[in-house]
Image 1: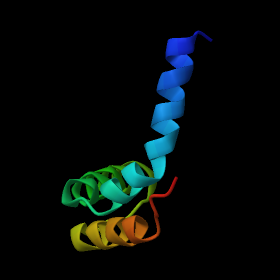
Image 2: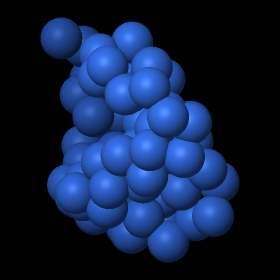
Image 3: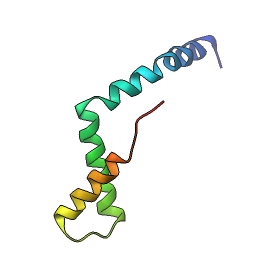
Image 4: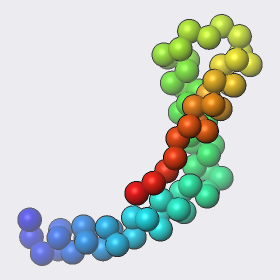
Length: 68
């Protein structure tokens, strides 16, 4: 690994916790997580009722924590 790559990695590592906090508190992150959860439910969980799909997706997002 060259000095530039190492410097970039060290700089990013110094801000990882702040970035995780930024993402966790950002409304778009919640929207993206919900979209992904709905996609996951659609592909992996055989739920028939539309409202149930949304409810399961919401429960999935509540079970995920963004951390370093």
